[in-house]
Amino acid sequence: MLNKILSDIIGCIKGNDINYVFSTYDGKNVEKKPNDIVITVGIGEFNMKKPVYSDEYSSYPYKITAEISITAPYWCSADRLYEILCNVVIDRITASDMNFDSIKSVSVKNDSKLKRIVYNSEIMLSGIYSIKRGESV
Image (cartoon, rainbow, N blue to C red; front, side, top):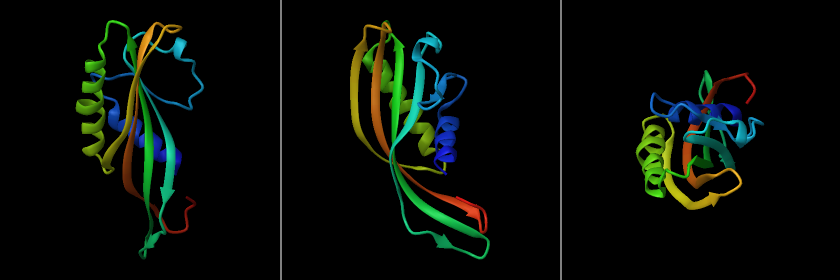
């Protein structure tokens, strides 16, 4: 279930303007990722409520904290990264089946080792994960 939710978030964010969206857990070093704006997505907290059953489906309401990091070359400003978070990431997630609940935290740091600026955020999302009855979660 977590892999599906994570891939759904990544699929929402990717577009013609944002090509480099990866899972935090993909095992690639940041140094080996493109020298452009790169977004990594992970899941920090996960809460699942009691399932709701119908004749065909089991539906699991959930809440997650998505950890989203936007890294960019130094020439990119923190304002531009915040704009990407709000006008790309959050807009695309709200257009999906997931519900955007709130921004939990935001931080900006310079990573001198990578020569990049890193914009970290935690956003609260909720949704319903449904599967056909009899399939495993």
